[in-house]
Length: 235
Length: 271
Length: 86
Image 1 (cartoon, rainbow over the protein chains, first blue to last red):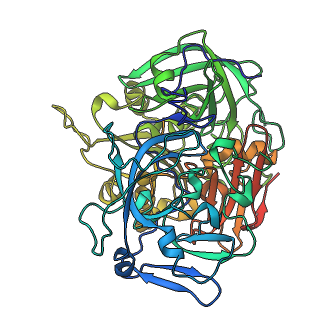
Image 2: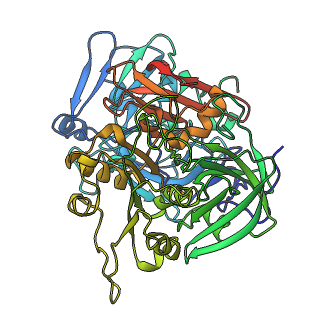
């Protein structure tokens, strides 16, 4: 029934595969769209904690304790289920591996929970082995400089580039992650659709079962791999 | 009621641009020809859907500016980094076709009292006649518009004029500059008819030579000076951005107006 | 306040299509705090992977709507009641 509208092109959409870095159905955007499912939370840092709840009682970090953990800077591509992708975004954060190491619990799934009530479910293996971070700063888009670590692979199943810095025991200077982008800290899981990179993250509940979170229980795919175009139930 | 059936399918229909009217440098009205259009109410809107050659679609909502009885006309402001508005304001021409869905809305609507009938109206909503008995609702009308929020309120003003409805009505309308005032000449003309419509314009970024209107945001003091006092129990319609609508509504409630008589419609900034 | 927030008027077309009826004038009762008001006055967030509708008093989620090319999912379990005037 739909028919093309003469002269309408929409925003410039590059959907060529840019050396295999853009998943099917995605297009590149300028800018960084801010998606929001509710009011922006504003938790004071003095009240902020990150907790992992599992067998053996919760492990909790205050903001100071969290920022004293080893950090990394990563350059990753991100893909939103609403079809925009952004390449070479640079983030600073704490690897989820660092956080999970402190917990004596090997439950295969977790539910990330956030200020404002948002949740998203993840498999343990999707946030392990250098695949996920709790990010406290966004540094923009990397330039075209080659980086020197050689620690990345630009394959179609893209591995995040990890520009390793010396472990930082003290907080770095620089601008913190803006509230509307998920600050003070958000989850970053770039190999899955960006709804899994939960803003305003406050912790994980370790689970034996994969229990769907906020969007996964209302139509979005339980896992959300952009390379398999797992957008909706049944995809 | 034509076009307002509570039960009824709402489907995408083809609309053809019948005429194009430049209102201001950034704002254009498109008069649409929709086959089988069953009519609409003042305050309602349309959803517009555009489809690119590769199947990509974008959709936005636009208020209907024309009064009931006339073909649906939308008034669109071109937004700087918009996706749909630059097409509608800059590219679409007479004969072009795209899809619309509507008319939509049953809350933010105003119905005029016709001159001869409706001696009795139910006081349930602004100008809502209905019921066989009821109080005659002579309450005045207060319309508060933030920039492009004027569009659905203009449909109400135009309905009032065409229905020869003498409800005392007052418009408070903020724009950035004089050049940005949409429907300015028409508003001047209607306000000068002396049939009970007053319009207060305020500009936030300019004070033109000889300007005797306000030059600031719509705030509590401005509403206190211009709007009906709460004792008049006006029916209020406020339309504009979320920030504008909520500031204006709060100010009116602070001044003593009944929140139950205030209806609001918030426009998004994506175009 | 978030600029991404609109009101129920913004999803009038979507709701009319889903429910088969004009819904902006329907009255919803929040299942969490009991506040009642027109759907047109609810807090609506459209810039999300789906639409989220929240109570203007307590911001609890009243409805979630997701549209794919061929399906619509709607959860309105946050609403205790909807009153639709015929």
